[in-house]
Length: 127
Image (cartoon, rainbow, N blue to C red; front, top):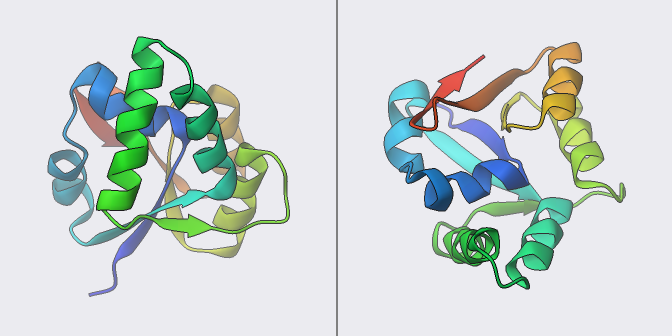
């Protein structure tokens, strides 16, 4: 069975720490086998947030550790903005995008890809 590619947006990577959601426990029943990816822009956004002394900064630092620990693939793109990088990758690949960003969700729907969202701050759901 081929692993489903899941592209994670910045806000979804902050979710496990802020909402106490176990990403693996949520994704496995939804997708079975999956492979996590982020764009270079998402990694940059996390690094910027991680440099702040806030709850979100702490969540970003944990997310960056998760990226290294889980061997999450980093997608290269010529685009500058993280959302543009995600849309570009989703247009070219059969994947699911995990995000809470309203505008990004609209863009992903237009190209016909599925979206994973956080529902009720307790679990993931596929739209």
